[in-house]
Length: 285
Image 1 (cartoon, rainbow, N blue to C red):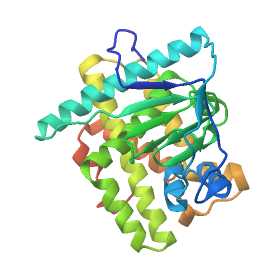
Image 2: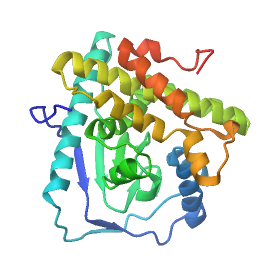
Image 3: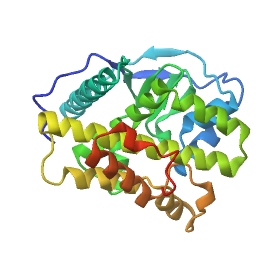
Image 4: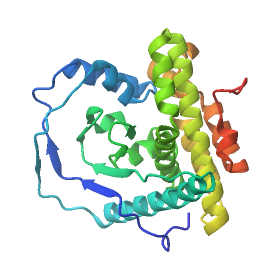
């Protein structure tokens, strides 16, 4: 991915090296954290579990001396460029429809973090919290993405950020609130199905970003699209469930299958139109 000459975002909140205490968690407590970890393992947004459990973590945190390698600092810079690129693309798209895009912040953390959605550990993976409109990422996740999910490469990493930004777009458009309300009235199977459609729309929105970023700034290099597709496939519910327990339960999917996730990312990337990402009205996912 050609990114070195890209604009850097000012919306990076670097909390690496900060220690967050997990003591005194109210509500769901450690049980909720365990549930969130299990949910992450099976491809579910941990924020959903944390919100449902009413988890509240303490704000105890202290800055720890930290020395980051040149590789880590370069990755941070890369994240800043990708975030800036999503700001430019969605800012233009929102302006074109007579709306104003509110830029989210990307919080980089080490090990654990406190968000408006609760206490989260790095094992949960990247997530977006609508409560504070921030993306949360421990960059060590990218090692897991490359090794466990067979999705190495910088554009695979960019896809992860673009997907979480897609959830921010859903929040701004009111989609997140509508889905949350619908899920509160639905049974578990129906709720999971709604969550799948929400996640696939975020994948499609990530593709929309890739389409416009490449059209405007020619960011793609040979193999980049394949990297993003590998990342989408690597975190498909069917693949994660097969890895975890050896069999697949489609009605428990919360993000979509590998094939579905790849298909909707490609749809967004090929068409570049957010209106084409309405997974909620699509008969076929």
